[in-house]
Length: 222
Length: 229
Image (cartoon, rainbow over all chains, first blue to last red; front, side, top):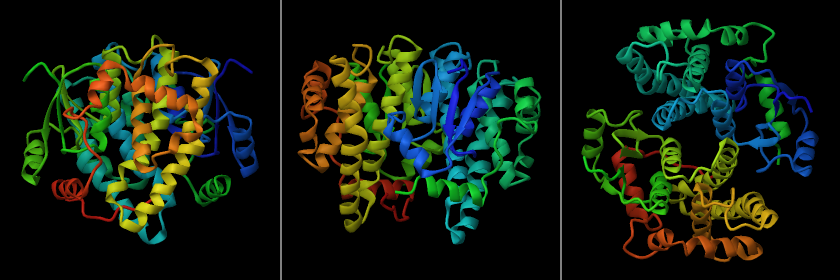
């Protein structure tokens, strides 16, 4: 096994994408194993790799880590992206959890039945513009700093830029009422590690398509 | 504002119960404000206390914390229930993630139709006995220690006990294939702070009933149907 973390998931965004973002933002190179068949998945379970029979799985520092939040907390802690003390960590956790609720809606979207898609898209737009983005717009406006917490780049900033770009893919003009977030988006996109991740050929995955949905249903079929 | 943490939620379990458990396990006294009317909730919203317009909200150490996981992480770290280093914290986070998923299936239970309740009960028991309990049974068997992580009482132990008791409320003999968990349950239940929390008159909330469901729906204007897993 190389020293690099190894990610096991489908060849697509899903719950692993936020982990890819965070590792990339921290400048950490990683390997990926893609699940394509049910047999591969069943074998992983049989061989005892998946603590709760689920992916994401990240092999890192001798551990077989599962549970997305646990994995990201570990990476954030290890690479100094989790604040300087308990209170900064609390703020970062609150922001990340809020954004994660929004990302959950986007995660589930490709799997909604055709007649619910328009309603769900409307919900994503409504939540982003009325519940989540105003919070971060205000945070940035109030302290006037480049980063969300403690005047320092953190997990919260990575999660927010990921969410902004993901919502924009669905609602292109979504930042039109949010000047602070527009500036934030530009600033974060220019951070070298993030800039690199946003370029073609990076481990960043494209928006989920029909093939991805098909693969998910096939691999996890009961 | 008093020095004690103050919890804002409905008078019932929901997402706040794990927070009550953890504070109690840490021996921390807390106050509670129960949401009973829509007006109370709107007042909280207008006052700007709810960062994402949601409860749970906990006033603690000068912060108005929201997001259950963030609140629990803060409490765990503050009261030394989060392991001694990053790797122990990782293990605790993984284990808590599992019990959280399991308790998530129970969280929506009171909101289901009678027919869906039966289906969901079976689902909960199946997941508990085939996916979650075997993991913790094995962890305890493999290291032979009293606690899940690092031979020290932690958030993971509190969360697992809470989950065990909740599943037992759905099927009384669910631990019958899990001798380690039976011993664990007895052991953790007899820790003084937890024993106290398990006694009548504590701030532990009862199994949610129709009145609780009605209150939540009314306060949040949450009238849509909730589906089973």
